[in-house]
Image 1 (cartoon, rainbow, N blue to C red):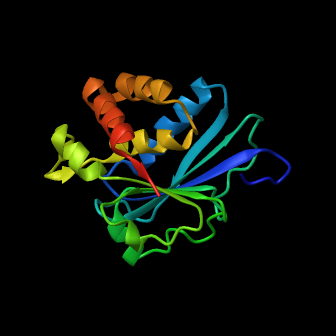
Image 2: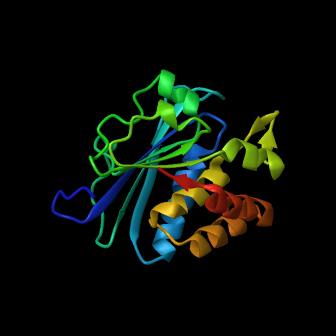
Length: 183
């Protein structure tokens, strides 16, 4: 965890516009808050358009958070689209003992100094009918894999997801939690 005088976990999300990365970071913050943590969520992106890279951020702590800048040295990196590895350095600045949570079937494409939690969130989204314009919406399934990191409890996370998007999305998160593998 990043220290900077506080016990803060810094998280950086990599997604494409339309995949729900911004929304996922907000859902994670809501779940962390319910679990008794302080939490922030915000995103950074250029001109909005489906498919463009989007970076989102969270900070989670047991103390008030007063830092609202982008995260340069994340403890956790979450990748919703593994094709971003070819266009961005998704693990740049990752802590030595950091965790990458990735939507991928090919763990070899990630150079992770710490842990890799991977899940095929695309297939899970498709199996649950989570699609828009023919593209899988992987944000709620990837959150299930994020619960493997113990940032939040699966129960709280699926409650927040269910309240926001219904039982199908909560079920997809549970499926991803069950299917996620750690390397």
